[in-house]
Length: 99
Image (cartoon, rainbow, N blue to C red; front, side, top):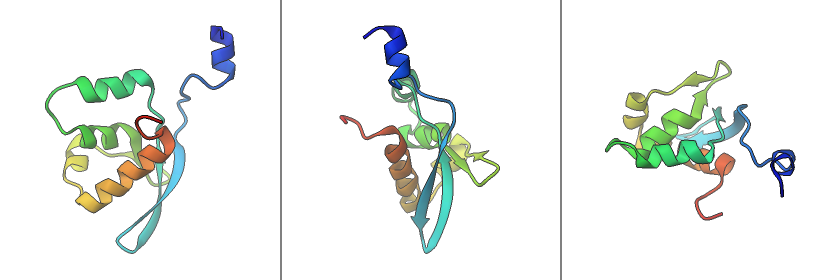
């Protein structure tokens, strides 16, 4: 494959986030999840000692129709069961490691 063929086959990550339905604590709501490029994922897991999962949520998830970002600090303080649901949404959009 050449570069143009890779581009046409979808080998580069688009900027537009995808809407994902999340259910948590009796509530159902949409979040928008950014697809992360190889470089973005690598940066999340090779940077400082901060929480990798909170960094992933802050880098990927946008809330509501206004697509409000979640700060690292807010992601770090999330209820663990909600954080797990958001990570599940991220994995739905970006694929699970090894797939």
